[in-house]
Structures are given as structure tokens and as C-alpha cells.
Length: 138
Image 1 (cartoon, rainbow, N blue to C red):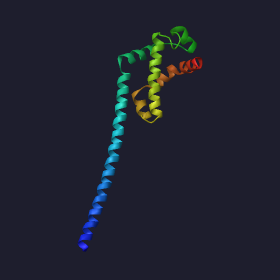
Image 2 (image 1 turned 90 degrees about the vertical axis):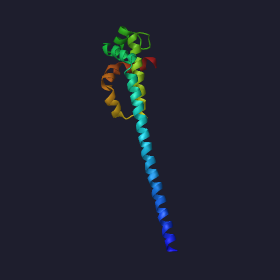
Image 3 (image 1 turned 180 degrees about the horizontal axis):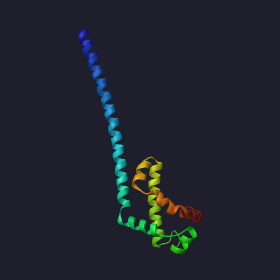
Image 4 (image 1 turned 90 degrees about the horizontal axis):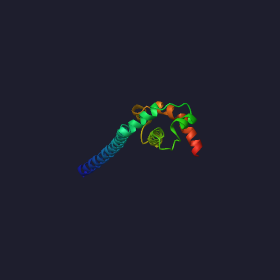
């Protein structure tokens, strides 16, 4: 009778270890899946930012020279006009706004964003324009 009890105990321990291994494996797979999805999202965003259309918009915005919002309007028109520089500004602003939302929601890590995109240059170029545009539009 003791042999049967020992066998039962051993099988219970083996079953518990099997369940524990399964849980650990599942957690590792889920973490890996999350990293894969984040990497896929970042790479798709990177490809979009490197598209010809976005590179042209970035070049237009980088070459635009203005000191403040009023000068921007005089040189390039209203921010919601069909002129190339305001369109470039809106494209770039919407792209980075989307990235900012993803960072805020913790879908993308801020360090990954900093390594892929030059945020400081973009922010300095748009800082004056963004605040004044929001005030005017309401």
C-alpha cells in the first residue's frame, strides 16, 4: 500500500511541476509577443517617417525660416492653408502627436522614440508655432 501512495505523491508533484513550467512558459511567450508587437509598430512608424512624402515634408519644414507665429503666417500662410510649408507642418505635427500618444499609453517606450527620431530639433522648430496656432484656432 505504501508503494501506491508514493506513486500518487510522485505523480502529483510531477503534475504540479508541469503546470508551473507551463505558466512560466506562457508568461515568457506573452512578454515576447508584446515586444514583437512593439518592435513591429516602431518599424512601421519608422518606414512611414522615411517615406518620400514625409522626407519632403520634413525638408520643407526644416528649411522654413521664421521667428514667431506672425512671421510664419506672413511668409507661408495660415497653418491650415494649402501652402506647402503649412501642410508639411501639419503632417509632421500629426505624426509626432501619434507617437506622443503611443508613448503616453505606454505602447512605445520613450527611449526607443528618442533613438529613432530627433525630437529636440522638431520641438524647437514647432514650439512657437504650435502654441499660437492652438490659441488662434481655439
